[in-house]
Figure 1 (tube, rainbow, N blue to C red):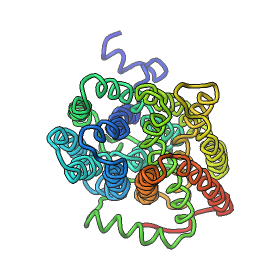
Figure 2: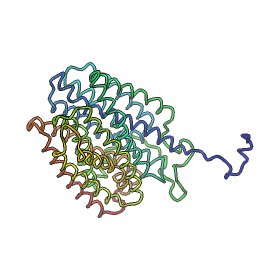
Figure 3: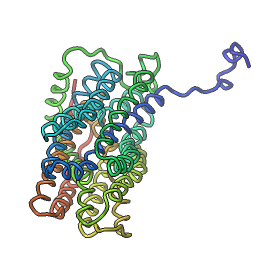
Figure 4: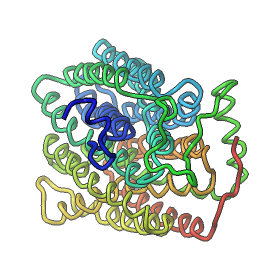
Length: 433
């Protein structure tokens, strides 16, 4: 069939083209994979930095706290910047920041340089490619399958951990920690061409609708944004903060960050090493968390389209608390069946909380949900930062991670109670402009 014949053919005979939303989602997925890989390095570097420079777990943990804090606090401002200037320029600059921050660490000799490079530069860069990025893409480009797409893009974090963590651990063991830092810098630069060529800011820029959009539900409009992006983000916070649901979601998500990135993501490898487990084995177990998290987060996105999101969060936090309660008794020189059960449960639950939390932000805050979720995610990283620093301090003081694990289990019970309260609220409660 010639081109002219194909154009004249009835619609039923034409080849159905892939909606551009899926291309944008694919580029976002690859970018999120890289961002997750960039953030997986600190847990691998902790013991090598301690061995080479004599830096304590608390000192290295404090640098990771700065990284996690900026990673979270940058999220709402990144969402506002994407709203003001577009997705592509913001993500491009973020990748360059990560490359610079990671590459410069090979020259450091003082802890303040670790804070500057990995804490500030990498924190700002990865913060611009965080969950607010996921919320922006899923909200702008999808009406149908929003929950599923949110789950898939969130799972990219686990995939990045899966791809990078064992490789970086092996590189660190064989060639030193500097090889891992250089690998991250090269990876950030490698993702940049995909963003520049294939990423687009909004479906209306291409003269199309969001995937699944109809006349009844046209999706998010392409409104012209003026004024300061920082002011936009702060205004969103000020208005959202008047709603009780915002604080309930922010509180529960802070605990989510404390019990994932802050505690397990940063301290699982050194905690396992304290019990005689080789670093490469512990890194492989943490990567397995990533494998199971892919399935758990995608499934959570699918369930979010069908089940009350607050109920899902109640189940997730309760399961996570029980897993943490059992962890001190499970660690040892080698893996056991109980260890594999922990990895399975924690993996399925790792960031399964994101799709229902995004859905609840969308329910209560409408088309400004990406910026509001950015602030909710900021609380996630503040919780992670506090946990990363506190767990390292408690480890240095007591010589064990038992107390941090037990405290985290109790916090999961608090998060479950907060989500129970969220489930009792219905409908939009604030108009955030």
